[in-house]
Image 1 (tube, rainbow, N blue to C red):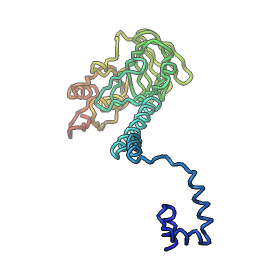
Image 2 (cartoon, rainbow, N blue to C red):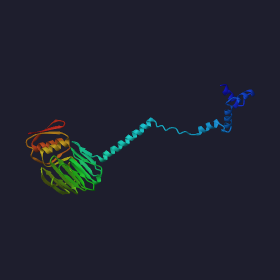
Image 3 (tube, rainbow, N blue to C red):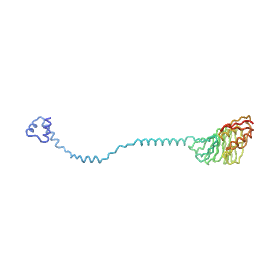
Length: 299
């Protein structure tokens, strides 16, 4: 410790004559003398701590970018929403579309080319929006009236046959084993098994059990659009099936005669009158046993 004290006093020139003489006589003096000579040539700028502090404060340090938790949640929710929206759009655009008319109802809608369709009770249509203008094809179960916009070929496929048009108004009905097509405007091509028939304005065709029947009509649209159920040589079971669809009821038939054919009309908006016409025509008695069930018995 004494040695370091003397060294410090020597560097600051504070040694007395006796202390200086003793220090110069020490064995390490020569080494200390050389260090002092070298350091004497070093130059150090004046340290201005106030200026340095000011410079440091002037430098704007970029604060770390912190995203609040609620913003992260919002970003994530937005991403999920966009994804869900894209999936929904794809499903609506690429997946088959279905339009239905339940029993006791009628449904009207427009196709992508603004063609108009009216579905009768208990009917269904399936189609695809994608590439519709180049592939106007749909599948029908039941009965529908079409007002087709002009364009490429328009096809209505049923389990019994196919109808092809370019732009016209027509009605298609496919129930059980009976296939009816009526042309109200333009021309339609009907394919049924190995048969192909061209219908023009006012012409109609019926296929049932392999047999064909052609008729004409003066109507400008199907009678069922105006709540009139029209039948042409149909048996009682087919008539009651249609009444069930139009009124959303169940009908029980207790009679042996089911072969007599009926041609005429029934109202689709007055059940009592419809039941009365059927009872009179087939000599039956109608009984309402509940709000949605009717029984026909022989008189």
